[in-house]
Length: 441
Image (cartoon, rainbow, N blue to C red):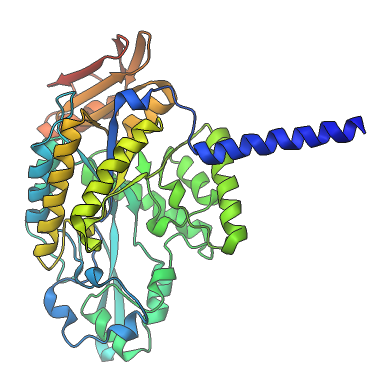
């Protein structure tokens, strides 16, 4: 009887602990986020060559053949960003500053490749693979990469990794072949294809070796574009599994975005939701070799009728995150800032300006994933923000912050210079200190 009671108590304790974890839903942190008032703006789909190259592509298009059933209307005119979209957005970010004096910063998560459908000899179609900055016909955007570089120099544009395609390329090819309407759309470089919403880039059916090769290629493309390796990753469509995380960790990608929205391909229904909650709770507490950053604030004004209400709700969600002792992590997809109908990005930028003005008044600071992760686990962080190096110590004691040589190399390359010293540097920061280092170091 005694053993039975002891077992029952043990089960109750474990169950209570899991329940607390499910409600609390976050990893242990070394930072008092309510005092820090940190905001991180994560934005997916930059670099994605889709859904249309231009407005003419959709003329006389059989949408039902491509995407039967409901499909968000705003996405039918989604397109690859251009230099004006980046410059306009960067201009708004640069006008808002956190209480540390640094401008607001956007973290655009990049898709790095694309497929072009082209007619070959004897009416045979071919698929041509492109890697940024190379793009399919129709998606050329003169001046885009200069605008990106200028935004990075200003410290308002901090790219991270999203993926290669945002879909399974094999399924796109298979689901296009032999369908006249779909092939016609593909020849116009329209990205949507039948079952595209379930043709996930990291679908569990894809060969692991193929995914490893794509990831290795992604890191090379990313480094060539931005002069550094990514520090954070978000899976396309929020679909990934433990094997994908192991693959990321093998390349030192230890900051994972969007776990709360993670979709397990085989976990469905009520049972799937319960398994997801348990999995999320356990991994956040026991997998100390990585940091999960949840998106706890939604800012998608162009996808809703009441855009002003979305902005108000996002501002409230930021304050609620701080009150729970969490950094505020905003989700804001590219669709809000780049679109073939200019009224859409005009609205998105206007509402972002309104949101950031409120955050300025609230005394927010604007961080990127690498900073949030470092503060979460060590209480200290470093980041290359344009031509500045930002070092932080948010603990209650003096700490050493090690700055890798790679961080200095990023700022040097943006200035067109070479790093003056090789090897890491060590800085001693007082409790609560933020140190902004400008110029060569």
